Image (cartoon, rainbow, N blue to C red; front, side, top):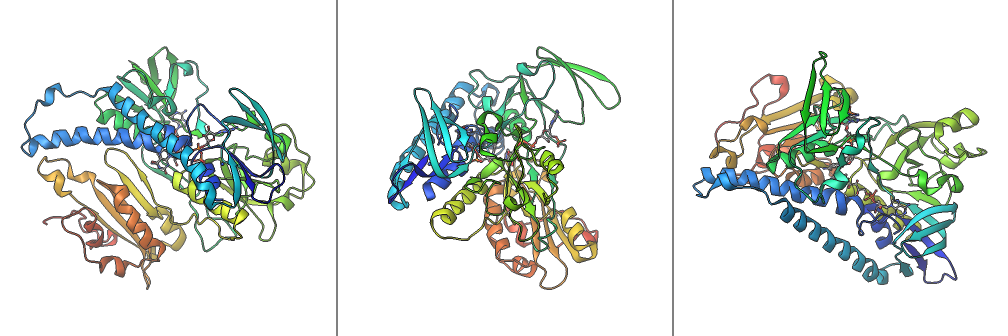
Length: 515
Ligand code: FAD
Ligand code: NDP
């Protein structure tokens, strides 16, 4: 998308490459070039939206089973998912969102500082740091921009093994023409994995470096909920080789297994596709491992007029007061510039810490908006990555905000951290006698007054809906006394959070009994 200010004579004041969550937010706030998808990027076309709708379809299956226990009478044996109908409904909704974004882009212009926003359905590559070649289906254009925002997101990774082409990825799953049938999902960890890093010069903020949430777990969850037999293969089980769709693998004891599947879904992570964008012509640097563009606190890349937001960015923290640009002065770029080969050829490089950002839609949206406000609205507000809530939409959902227990202990010491917890049976699980041990709550707080809450973790129904409010409270520096002094809403799952009384330290049972 290319935007022109009211007083501009020629060219564009802002070019946004990428029409996903981050790029659209940036263009609407203050414009897209790309794939065969409609506007909305990963989230709308192959991510949050189709995933949540299929998750909902799977939850309805569980509800049908529950309904029988509540007295509903119908023939459960003949129940089967009509994949084509589900896929059609999901794809229709996606198209309506694509259209909505398109309309909004035009409508929004009157509120923007721009006199004109041009939407180009084209693939953008760099000619130099101000000039983009936009190649569409029918035409090619060269556009000049004062500022350029790269919001091109990430795409599925494929493992480097024989037979890889037999599999699909989550990008293909939501529009699969036929029911997936018996599916093997490769990727995912045994547990929700969290990696955190503390920037050396940012002692007051503990930034989540990256939370591995796992497309694998979510896809396995809803496919199995829809009634397809699913097997999930995690990294600790090495893949031996592939013969069409008969998969052979060896376990840790060397025992060899073999099984035939209808669908093989690769969910081994996602990665940028920057190599086809000629970023070297603009002098842009990317991280050697993640392949993402390096940015500073202001979302600025190493090139003065180029910014990156959303999944594509990799944060670098240079020494205080030293701008990223100053760190890399004098470096002559190579075809595939990375910070590591830069480091070896430039002794003046001083990069201190680096980590990927949270790959989440609301994070991309907010940082896109804030960037536009800084570029064109005189704002100085930076994105705050602290206490960002998130939810994993597995059959039993998991949501959290703040620190995990291990990180809280690492940061403050065991004696300074109190953990309240409860395992509970949601009322709605009682009649159908669903397993109670599946639902669990953990609240981590400081022990010394004023006992600030450091982390809230909830595993149970409607996790995302419940956590959003607690995330607001956390941003207001919630203390444990305030939490436990709040009157609950009865009978809900959320009230279990304000009824917590058992600490881990006490060693008492965390099981909640009675009403
Ligand atoms: P994207 O949304 O990926 O947008 C990038 C856009 O740039 C795309 O349209 C692409 O075609 C375009 N593009 C790329 N290269 C070029 C080029 N050279 N020229 C022009 N255009 C280009 N997040 C959540 O918060 N909640 C969820 O429940 C959730 N579920 C997810 C489920 C799945 C299966 C996946 C894969 C992701 C999920 N995410 C979820 C993550 C979320 O979708 C991403 O974090 C978010 O979409 C990132 O936005 P973005 O703007 O950075 O990139
Ligand atoms: P992730 O990096 O989160 O997970 C990839 C998984 O694949 C890891 O668990 C990794 O194992 C495993 N893996 C990697 N290589 C192999 C291999 N060769 N064999 C077996 N397993 C392998 O990527 P995702 O694609 O799942 O998610 C991408 C991003 O999208 C996430 O960062 C997340 O933020 C976002 N997302 C958000 C969702 C939400 O908000 N609900 C839902 C889905 C995605 P290991 O653990 O050993 O590294």
